[in-house]
Figure (tube, rainbow, N blue to C red):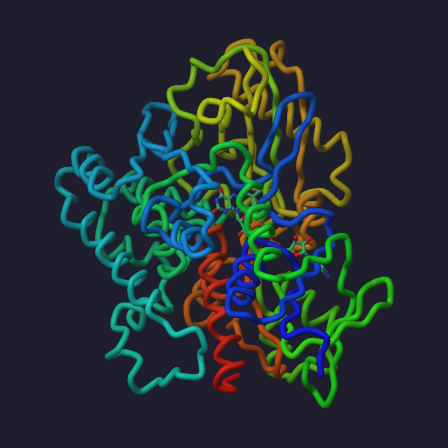
Length: 496
Ligand SMILES: Cc1cc2nc3c(=O)[nH]c(=O)nc-3n(C[C@H](O)[C@H](O)[C@H](O)COP(=O)(O)OP(=O)(O)OC[C@H]3O[C@@H](n4cnc5c(N)ncnc54)[C@H](O)[C@@H]3O)c2cc1C
């Protein structure tokens, strides 16, 4: 007899979702989290009266009917969480023009069509394809054993047609104006990839998870979301062992049978689910010699997503200078240029940056008469060997001087300053190189090619942004639900 039915390694949003759903079914769930609090990337912190969300600034699928909303409903948590709709979702500032992004698809298509009237048909076509792909992908069963190459193209025509294509290729088929292509692909930066590299399937997830149920942020701090799920798990009889790191997945006859913690304690489980960096799961917790060679080489060739450098500021005064809370500032219209540098572990001088003003929508983030700002850029982990204070100061200074074009006297108004680097994110989550979204959503790592929830190791499952469908809160909630479904099938029908 194992100690518990299910051991979950890591309490990110995916692990929490999965754990709650399995505990709800009556399984005995034990979740092990190395940090003192749950949430992983989805966490918040305070400094001198200001509060900041470490990562997540805008969420998809939280409004009525959306996936996150449905999860909260199922767990009876709807009355405990409030979401603030962001409409417009964002403003994009180019040197000669400002473009507003609506969180409603019809309005967004109208806005773009009025800027490019001759290209209306192409714009509609692009979103029709993304919508179809998202719908088809959402009907995939939780386990992948069903996959039949012979019937795939008739059952999933759009996925089949676009599974190997980049979003840049889709745009090339449908629209022609270069600036329209830029505007249509601007949100590929949410996956930290340019349109020429992101898969159509990955882009469909990003765009549709926002357009289907609007864009929101959590009222209060984003960490309320994982904290409430943690409470829900307890209520359903689940346990969270916080402040403990798993150092080994125990194996017997090539099957996962439990875990060993850093303090030496061993716990057995019928099933082990890993919510952590997939590379770490297989290479560190299991060991390469125990993994089938084909799977090992697949893992070796996989590429993580990039990370961020983020500067959180608490400042004096309000922020009437900004008309919305979420802004993105571009110095040129060619999105590919930045990534050429990032791929060489450099941050270009003209890197676009995010200028977020969370306290504009969440006044509780700052004391009376003060505001919060969050300035960030995409950053490769290897930009700096140690991310020392000198590097942080240089990047911070550059961001402050660029943001001063929008917020006069910014430097003088700063009262609190905190930097987060890819190294900080790695240290907090153990996601390799501070990868913000698991594996990069390039075609060979997206859709049907992404790591599946079932693994070559019997009794070992994956959940979270290193597996399917991918990163972002809506994505990992989906992953948590699907892994729970696959594991539940294993308990009820003996399916792997
Ligand atoms: C800077 C940044 C900005 C982002 N912005 C957004 C946004 O605006 N909107 C959005 O939707 N998404 C955003 N994301 C992405 C989103 O936060 C992630 O995709 C998602 O939270 C990942 O959840 P997860 O469950 O897969 O795992 P994670 O959050 O990575 O959690 C994994 C957990 O496992 C724990 N762990 C690791 N190793 C061990 C071990 N050996 N033993 C025990 N515990 C372990 C970690 O401590 C962590 O708590 C952002 C991410 C980052 C980093």
